[in-house]
Image 1 (cartoon, protein in one colour):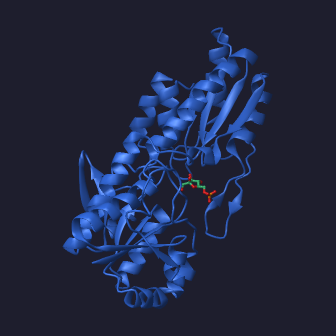
Image 2 (cartoon, helix red, strand yellow):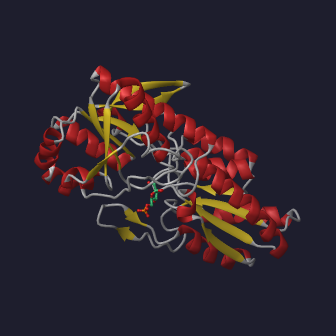
Image 3 (spheres, helix red, strand yellow):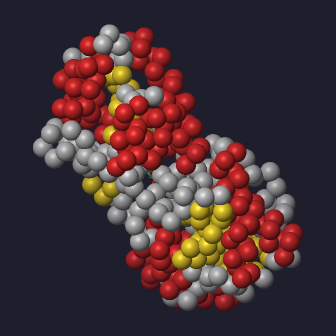
Amino acid sequence: MRMGVLTSGGDCPGLNAVIRSVVHRAVVDHSDEVIGFQDGWKGLLEGDYRKLDLDAVSGILARGGTILGSSRVQPAHLRDGVERAKGHVVDLGLDAIIPIGGEGTLKAARMLSDAGLPIVGVPKTIDNDIAVTDVTFGFDTAVGVATEALDRLKTTAESHQRVMIVEVMGRHTGWIALHSGMAAGAHAIVVPERPFDVDELTARISDRFALGKKFAIVVAAEGAKPRPGSMEFDEGGKDIYGHERFAGIARQLSVELERRLGKEARPVILGHVQRGGTPTAHDRVLATRFGWHAVEAVHRGEFGHMTALHGTDIRMVPLASAVETLKTVPEERYTEAECVL
Ligand code: F6P
């Protein structure tokens, strides 16, 4: 068989591990041929690809980023390009396409699959917000990076008796904030799923200082928002892909908390550092298993599906169900975290 792989959307530690695994399983065990499209869907639309053999994927398991490059494509542009994409699939003699991506990529994969392209998806995102898989690779790495940063910020916050507001990624969901905040013993966590009350937050930190504690750490997912009317808040706008362009929760909250508490507050934005660098062992294993199972799914002809982790097993789930809803932080997980902060 002949299959094409691509990585699309924001990058994520573990993408190279999937690419390597697809090539190993396909080439070594099935004598297949694999090509890689450059820069995501763009490569498929423009017919920009290269052959992926064992040499091409040698030494990439532990490497962050993606050897294929990535990009975001506007959904309308992709819809207009369906016939072109189909043409390339036919011309290149492809039996399958394996797109590796997050929410936006999987929606595009579903659209192309409905249009008749043979697609087997692989989910990725550091945000961990894909509903039908227990976890996505990249998340564990991002939580590790954020936790280490929080541990480090605690010592400098204590030296200067400051409040640190640490902004982590998480546009729609607060998984990174929740897990890194719990792991580092943060003193408050704010997530997009639950608009926070700034009075309650202030009281919580103030109570901590009243106990004689010298500093406080607040973890804020980038998409977290205050309850409407509870503080002045600039929501930002949208970018050309329809994604929210945040105006900075950490910056805005640090100004507000400094004013209310009379303590120095500093915003710290971890940003893309959470997405860079080598994947953890957990993420390498999950990514490798996803790649292996994607190739098997292609051989079974299970198109219109994607890999997912259910417990300890990898299952194939319909792309349609993968893009129905986002996996948000449930209230009980938040309550659990709150009581140990
Ligand atoms: O989708 C993952 C994500 O890391 C989000 O949490 C974040 O808002 C976004 O990507 C940032 O993307 P970009 O690389 O386009 O700035």
